[in-house]
Image (cartoon, rainbow, N blue to C red):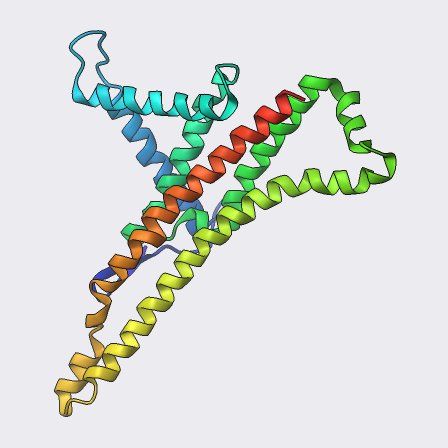
Length: 253
C-alpha cells in the first residue's frame, strides 16, 4: 500500500490488481470492503459485550437505541411487524452503505464508488424480491404477472422487472461516484489556484510556496459535509428504504 500527502489530505493507494489463486484478483474495492466489514464486526462485538437486564451500561444503551431505530425504520415503511425478519438484513445493508460511503474521509476509496459493489447488493435484493413474489403467488402466479394486463406487455414487464436492481445500483453508485469526482476536481483546482496566486513570487520562494496547495486546507472539508456526510447517509437511507418497500410489495402480491 502506497500513500502520498497532498495539502492537508492523505491519499492511500492500494494496488488495483494483485493476482492470487490463479486468475482471482484482489482489487482496491475488495480490500476496502474487507476493512469496512472488519470495522462493523468489531463495533458490533464491542457494543454487545456484557449485556445486562438491569443497570445497563452506556454502551448497551447505544446498542439498544440502534436496534430500536432499525425496528422503527422497517415497521414505519411496512405498516406493522409482519416484516420484522427483514430488520437484521436492512440494518446490515444500511450500516455497510454508510460506513462504505464515509470511509472516503480517511483517504481510502469508497467501495460504493465502484459499480460492482452496488450491483452485488442489488442482485441480492432482486433475489429476495423475486422469492417473495413466488412465495406470495406461486411460480405460476409469478410468471402470469408478466402478462398483465395483456400478454403483449410481457416483454415490457420483463424489462421493468430487470430494471429494478439496475436502477437501484446505478442510483447509489452515480451519487457516490459524482461526489468523489467533484471532490477530486476541487482539490486539483485549488492546487492550481494556489500555484497561480503564489507562483509569481520571485525565485525559490515562489517555487516552494506555489507547490504547496494552501487553499486545499479548509475549503474541501466544508464541501465534504455535503458530499461525504449528508450524501452518504442519504444514499444509504434511500437504498435501504427502497429495499424494504420493494420486498414488502412483492410479499403482499
